[in-house]
Image (tube, rainbow, N blue to C red; front, side, top):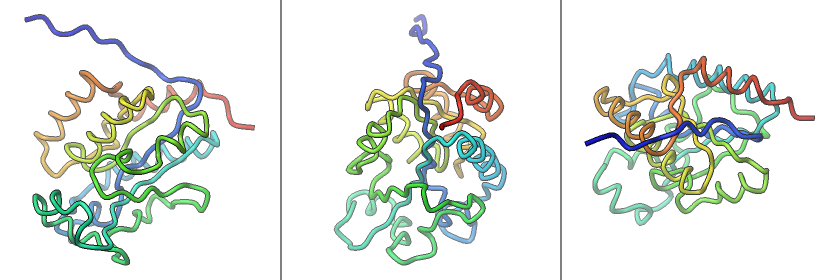
Length: 202
């Protein structure tokens, strides 16, 4: 059976970056949810520097639970999520990414950065037409956010070296699926080249 035809979406006029769950709970191997993502965090930091130079919108997400009823079915499926409690160090953005005061933090309960949050509305209000997706983990929140980004009608670009998963086969398979139907899948260098075509905000 022949493969479905697919085309690259490319970058539009107004990109934003959504850093999905680059929080201590995922980037610190001492946490049950965590793994060693040093190279991926470094790649995200490189991308963030470019977005900051451009004055383009930067969004971070975190997962925070303040009561047992929030996302109760998902947490029953993955009990390790219970450590992401309000006030816990595990929900903080990794300090290596040096989140700035003007960079928005989206608090979510589920996998997608867009599900039951106001992220779509915020991006639309800023005139964003292209969303770069990076973060953790590829088979969970990155994939869900990438799919929903497209479903919100944004050009969606997933930067493969800036995403990570504790399960390498799942990482590879989910990147393949994202690139096949939902997003442009690019390397860090390719992402930087794409951003080089965008004018610095006044």
